[in-house]
Amino acid sequence: MPTFLTIWRRSLCAVTGAIAGGIVGMIVGLFQAAMPVVLTMPEILRIALILGGFAWLVILLIIGVWLHYGVAQVALPSLVTTFITAFLTIYLANKLQVALLAVWLGLLVGTLVGLLLCRLCGMPRYTTGRIQV
Image (cartoon, rainbow, N blue to C red):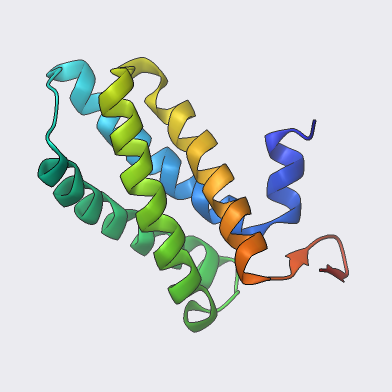
């Protein structure tokens, strides 16, 4: 079974999902640790939109600007990946009430969402020096 690092080296979508899941999981975990409360579905959606938007801006900065992939090329695919990851991470963290493991939950959810969406849309996988489909 491939490790996270192996998956992240081969799929930019998985990296995008992992970054978003890590950010959202960290923030949700901190709030759950400080004030454990069960959220309703409308609250989960609102929080997912806010944290997903923040994570999307961070992804545009990291992958689009700093790693020179280009903001225009990264914007739409990362938007979809980020908001699905944010919603699922918050939903699962709310159901499981695992404040201390929310970052790991976000990394796992983001990686899986990124891999699934990458395979569904047919994005090429970037590896060392060549494109594999």
